[in-house]
Structures are given as C-alpha cells and as structure tokens.
Image 1 (cartoon, rainbow, N blue to C red):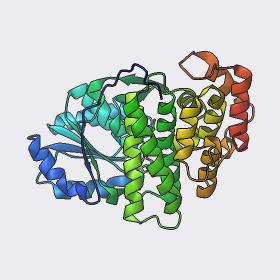
Image 2: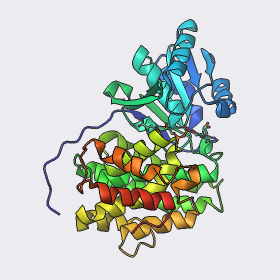
Image 3: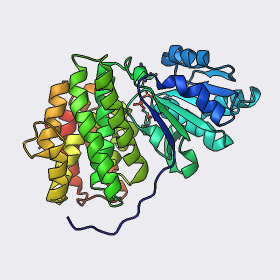
Length: 356
Ligand code: NAD
C-alpha cells in the first residue's frame, strides 16, 4: 500500500509484563528511590491492595475509595491523605476508575505513578484523564498524566469476572478499531491495533470455559496493553463519542456500552473506509469471512454478551435525545455525521438488533 506522511509520538512508559510480575514491584520502587507509596484501590479490591502492601517494606497507607468517573471530591480526600502521610509516590491497583484517581493525584502533585491494571480498559497507557465535578465530566490530555511504570501481572486478572472480562475486552478492541481509521493514525499504531485485536478476539471467547487459564489471560492482557497504546496515541471517532455521550448522559455502564455500540459504529463508518482497513480488520476477527462487521457480531455472539442498551435502563425516548447530543459538536470521523442515520444507529443499539 501507498505510504502516506505521518507523525508518530511514542508515549514513554516502562512496562513489566507477565504472570507473577507483581513480585518486581519492590525492585521497581527501589529503582526510582521511592519508599512511601500511597496505594489506591476501590472498596471491592482491598484484598489485592493488601497483597501489594504486604510485598513492600514500607508504605504511606491505602486509600480504598476509588470511584467511577473520578469525582473530584474523592480526589481531594485522597490528596489530603497523600499530604498527611508524606507519600512520595502513588500505586494504583485496579481498573480505569482506580487508575483515573492515580492520574488525578499525580497531575496535581507531580508524584510518580505506578499502575497495576486489573482490567482491559487501557487507561494506564494513555495521557488522558476524565474527571467529574458537580456531575459534569471533563476530559483533558497532558503527557504528564501518563503513568511512568505499568506492571501487568496476568495473575491479577484471573479474578476479573468473565462478564466484565468480555465487556472490558471489547472496550479495548474498540480503541484499536477506531485507531485503524483515525485521522491521526500511522503505520506503527496500525501494527499495534491489529495485533491487539487479534490477541483479544482469539482469547476472549476461550475465557467462557476456562477463565483461570493463565495463557489465555496472558493473551487477553497483552492485547489490552496494545489497544490501550492506540487509545493513548491517536484520536478516536464516532464510536468513542457515542459511548461517551450515552454513558455520561444516561448513566449507562462504561464497558457494557462500548460492547453494544462497537459493531454499529463500525457498520456506520464502513462505507467510508478503505478496503485495506476493512480487510485487515476482518483478517484478525475469526469467522469473519472477510466481513469485519460480521466478525464483530460473531465475537459478541460467541461471548453471549448483552446487545441492547435498553437492558441497562435506557428509555426509548432517550434515543432522540442521544441523537441530538451525538451530532451537537463536530469531530473528525471517516463518514459524515448525519442525524437521521446516527439516530438509527442508536435505535438499533437500544433495541439490541445486530449491526448491519
Ligand atoms: P472499573 O475500574 O470501574 O472497575 C469495575 C469494577 O471491577 C470495580 O469494582 C473494580 O474494583 C472491579 N475489578 C477490577 N478489576 C478486577 C479484578 N481483576 N478482579 C475483581 N474485580 C475487579 O472498570 P474499568 O472498565 O476498568 O474502567 C472504567 C473507567 O475507566 C471509566 O470511568 C472510564 O471512563 C475510564 N477509562 C479511562 C481511560 C483513559 O484513558 N483515561 C481509558 C479507559 C477507561
């Protein structure tokens, strides 16, 4: 294929990957001359946080109130703890919610941030932070938000419930799908995107029968890392805008919305995509028979995930409101955003019809 001019900016972070790599945390802190990390987690992951604390000679304590959408009043509380305990660093162990809190503290204090991700959402690989104040979510990007070290210990993902593994995994795949047709994409990100989708699409359906299989979990987490890198490097389009709008305005769960919307967003954009993009995507989706939308539909079918937004409480009359919001602000997208067609995309996702 013809090589177009491009810009590629690497996001510099140190990645330690593999089953059991959590044991390298003490050495990583020593390498950075850190001795008093504040450990962050959600109320659901305090036991994993105590496993982390148990590995270390000293800590500044554990703050276990990380919450979805990074509310600033929680960040303020955690900042006070970090200050009172003279923490010299932040360790976040958990999914996007906990990592978001780590980023919020790190960008305000300059404290080094070590991430230990336990889902496939990919926030650890991005310089992006979304925060909520008085119910309004704002997102910003700054190279200083990118965590310095990421420890991907596959063993920590064995406890991720299968249903969350599925939706979190498709959330990751969505980053790579949109990276393939991003206006700011480049050949390096293209490689990462296709390899990330390939690894996740092969691994996820296997988790249904064998959720504790370390090799399968390894492939899934490896794919999630690459997909997160794509999200952190290039601009996203229709799919991410739709999910942001639906999640934020109708209080729908993040990863579940990504899972439902992705095939519809791809079907909408497909007529505007090159054959090369569509063929390369289809090639990494098992059973696609050369049709990328079919490949995504099939992947969701194999996992047996929920396909309808209405199952999460979205009302039929919200379809119109969502369409208004989705076309309110222009953004780069391969296919022109037309209200009537976008409304039909949202309606199908609401009803749970397969994408076509
Ligand atoms: P999450 O962090 O909200 O986690 C969901 C629940 O699962 C929590 O209760 C958590 O404690 C639990 N959990 C996580 N890992 C577990 C494990 N291995 N075993 C058992 N329980 C586990 O979910 P998420 O999908 O990872 O993150 C979603 C949030 O992250 C959203 O707010 C989203 O906006 C944000 N996000 C941000 C970026 C970014 O680049 N800034 C990227 C992706 C997601």
